[in-house]
Image (cartoon, rainbow over all chains, first blue to last red; front, side):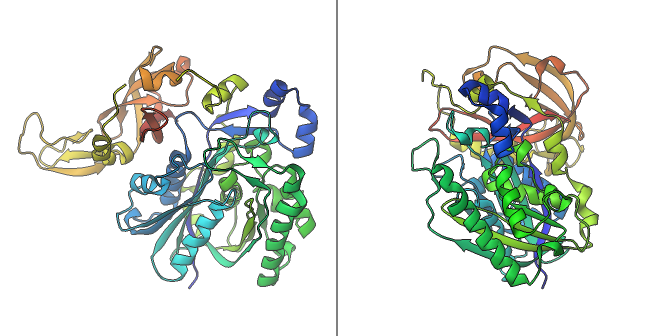
Length: 351
Length: 132
């Protein structure tokens, strides 16, 4: 039984802040940041947006494409590191808002930036096991970087939602693989507002070791080579890291194979939404028969990898909801650093 | 500000979260928020109707001196939206420059945070309009 994605959707806030605007406040050298990290601007959630609202909008688009009765969805999983509540699930509000029944399994996942691919992984497994006809997996974040920290240039907001099913599948999941180790490269303790990270340690021993570990194991499992894939997408903490990982593996970073799902230079790091949103941009344009290679990454640390094959069904539902690229490129509203700090609650005020 | 009653918000979830209206089976008239009786018929029978989420701005005003939970959003626009189904819905217009709003502009509804009493309270969600 071919199980996989039967509907996908993304939601990106329209507010943006340019890297220069942030760098000017902290006296940082914008050109060297842009060149070093390949980051130009990032999305910023409006004050009335959070992980729940972004997830609802992305899921509604996925439902439009899937064309299914939401009451038949058996599971709703949201992966995020910025769930609005410390105690109270995001998933229940999303399930209620998209019209699921009460007979639904609901859980919030957290694993730094890979919580979204976890939600997809578990949703897929339930359908594959025959436990339920449909399951929804969402990756969403409204991440915060501490003022003046390197993460402030990248931490952004967005969501991607995928409905898994066994009928009218638009992209089958042919292989998956997970790779993890106890690597303390990035963390946030309870009650802490901003995360901490281990600087340069987040690169080689963390992102690259884990991403490459998962990607190589997945390539071996599926018996395919990078050139067999029409598209690839990796976790995108900045523009540079996924480029380096893809190049090392043998993907062509100058072609559409890589650039189609490479959104971070203009979107920022949407954390749990990062590689999932990249996947939505790929599905927006993929043709039947195309193979897609995806590897997420979450600090702490782990990667989930998937090999997808696009089916003939994709052309029937592609146009039923907004594409991801126009949300990234059009209707943007640029914020000043002052507006950005107000929107993100960074200003100390009288209570 | 007084704490909002969680139970009230919970009871109104179908209309606030999913824009569920109701239709008088006899007259065919659609009501939003849903009604238990109509001005003409105290025994009216209803069926649920899902609003499509599309409409246009029938009228609007700009709030510059906002009440407590909304002060950070000011200036913001509050509009009467004429929906495809013919019912009027009052909603904030999100993500817009209030100087550029015009009557007749097409809008769609999005799921947004409406307000919270404070940082420790329940977060109240619902619909807002965004210009298409």
